[in-house]
Image (cartoon, rainbow over all chains, first blue to last red; front, side, top):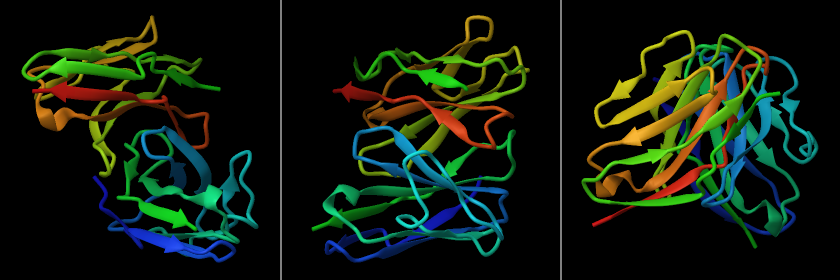
Length: 115
Length: 115
């Protein structure tokens, strides 16, 4: 399995500001993903973080709003920019060692509240 | 594109009894992997069990077992001797080779174990 840490675990932010969430894995992984989840709801994939290149965003998510970095195979950041109350959610980092056979593992999540 | 359907949004079971959560999926791939994840209230998503499609034998992990019917594209989770700590949201997930390494998740089933 992979051990994943996320920082911060939770935050309360003001409208119009930005927050950067960090994801650190204890071993090198091929795949890193960022999800959004409302409490009690299913997961929504924001993007796949690609090492050394631009992230691949899902429909409805754009780089200007959710810039992502992945400088190496164990670390990624997700920034939520120009936040509004609609961005209040749990943000999850997820990893997999390969593109097919490995289990996808999840971090503990970052609970974001925007006032 | 793959789809994963969990037809039971909510279920409940008495402590010590057995419950089965349903999951169906649709794919044209022959090599893929199926997973059940557990997400307790306000806690981290963890892997419960995984099944390789090429294996005919159903996976088991202690009190958790699956009924994998490849032809029917069905992948149900059976929880035996249910415990209060099994109360959680359960997600069924599919991982194949044609979706850029991404998993497809069902909408989840909220399971409540009653004392």
